[in-house]
Image 1 (cartoon, chains in turn red, brown):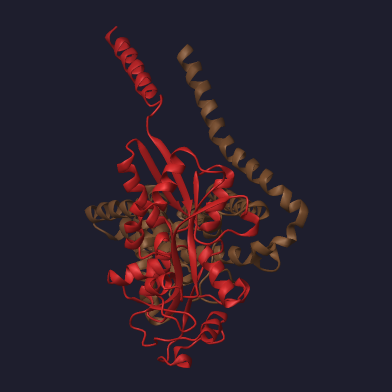
Image 2 (cartoon, one colour):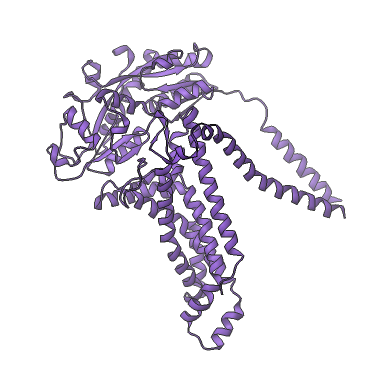
Length: 274
Length: 279
């Protein structure tokens, strides 16, 4: 008799416990996916936004700018992070610029080479120059680090140097900026390209990389701010339709002067300063 | 009795559900893949290169990449695993053998991404020192071998310990030396079990994603050597799934189907081998 009562009690209480998982939660969720360049900034903005508007949760995932576009079209996310201007095929979407950034080449700090011409960079990535000795460095093979397809950093790089992805002879293919930076840190004779913001952030925090500009211009946030760094780009957060509700509130926050401090912390250029 | 009937039925239903999961996955993959196979034909996936944004979907470089890394890992882990199992069973003092087995079981529980992280931060720079770029087939083989080894040891161990003890007693009574018994008696009898264990681990080696993605370099090219980077089928799916649309997406499903069929083939062979005896 006692045993059956125990089983009944356990099964009823388990059932009730399972039910308690259902029911409405009061938090409003905002999901952003896409560019790994913008992600750190959006995460900081998200945290500040959550403090401002209690009961909201901002979820950030990377995956590349193309993922940002694909996810808002599929309705999987609310806002897409796209680290470039929109293409013609994307003109039906609504971009909101929250910062400006550039793309820089990065070398390991222990590499004595400090300057590379555009032509040398093209030939290195095409595999025609494969020893640092050919560009004024020591006799070591060059390890070329390229970005995976779907990343806007790759598209902008290809566009600027008039290359096709087919033509590049990469030794390592990486996904997001952090992986690129870690790869260059781990291999003293590698060369890669990442966002200026991410690279400057890492450099100032002591990572063993140095930035190499393009076309003779030094890569730095100051250069982009002053308008003469050629490989710069807008950082956009994109919505499928005109933004409303929590998405609109977040976008307004991100474009406000309050957000400028966060933008500068990530070594990007705030929109009001441009 | 009613409970007996109930247990019988629920067991049958559970078994059916478990088996049908595989069939569902197979059906889903085939259904998703068919449209592109119909348009391009099977041979399109084994010719040319992998340039999905331009409509070329050759899986060959990545298929070879997966095979090289998996076969290399097994070639490294299998002999090592068998030797460790033999040591644990025949050469180590009983207590040490137990400790050894415990440690190997612990190794098998380490998440694969931890191995990948270790590979990226320790192994790859070390290989770079000798032959750049470091992210290579070799790095993939070493990391995979480390992941596959514990279970090879454990299955070999259980295969060896299931050799009937009276075989060994009889051999000892006849005066055979220890190594002779192992090499001529225990191994041949345990071989089917050991082999099937290895083949099951090959399924894991082919399917490993995170760790190989971190250490093999992910460059889509035919494997040109031990120190050159490659991209495996699994890493390819992980890298491109997020943003692949239309035909590109279907091509990724096809590569998943290919992986599944290879695994099914290998497991079937393992199953067949298990039932046989070589001695």
